[in-house]
Image (cartoon, helix red, strand yellow):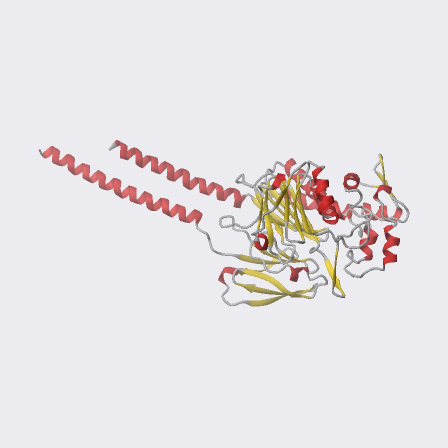
Length: 137
Length: 345
């Protein structure tokens, strides 16, 4: 009778431990899922002058639209920033291709001003990337 | 009891495989991904390779080398020598591209012509000093345009008539894409994507085995997309009136010159995207199919088996060739358009 009782106790204890481990396991799996798959939610636009990154903007953190000016010995471009997107609105380059490119909000194609060697590029985050890989134009 | 323990072990195993699997995916796409930006051939080039980073500097050298040979304006280039002396022994690259380019010219019945440079220059598209030339001036210049008069001899010598000028601009970026793919493959890279100023070319598939998604720019030229095409191991090259144009007296003049009239081609297309293995061919054909207009362009495709295409017409219709009908989907303002599929006769 006593032996049976003790065996029952061990049984219950073991079951409790298994339950605890199983719970931990579920939490671990959930955590790992979250860590590896969570979207970072950040959209970063980098501004390059002649290949060198001169400014970095977190587009997801923009609340009020604003503009800034990029000037070099080659000329001037005015860049406008809104939540999730960025563009050139004014430039003193001859072709104005940068202005005509309009807004970009993904990494498929950068905004380029060839005469000023200015490139604005949204950096790709492999984990949240859903846009195209490149643009044929 | 034993069952539960086994279950537990099994769960651990799953957990282990799962987390390490995720890390692995992250490792391939982030750790081995290398990119470079190159300013060359009057445009911005983006190179992305998955694998050894060293290949990027070799790729950059390759691009600069080709630019140095094909440039019309650089005084040390093969083409400059050819245009100034009318006869020159050129590099292997220039010779190969000229030879291939002339084959494409013949295939398009001269709609693509590697001697159209004087006409394009008269419009100011080479210097951005835009102007509308007089009709008599264009007639005079058109008389000099004839790719059949370019002569190639076996010792890599190219000769052109004394009043002609040649320019490889309509095929140079496509050729550069082809040579980059060769370089990457030779260096053991199996996944790469280059964007040479809007000329996209892919080596293999994405690292995860999926197809590359290449957007086709909206012909409005406002940065939006008209559609997206999924490709592996192919070039995707688009020509459209929106790429380079100027306005005078309320009229828009774009840069794709009709080689029969000397005026910008008024073809009924807003843009033409050519998709195929060979970048040089796709590059040359995208411009010439655009200039041809629907009837001739569809016929040329029907007589070919080495490329596919997406045509966006002025009336809002989209035509896709059968080879890409399942790989193309319209986007944005074209999202509701059902593409008409062209089948080989």
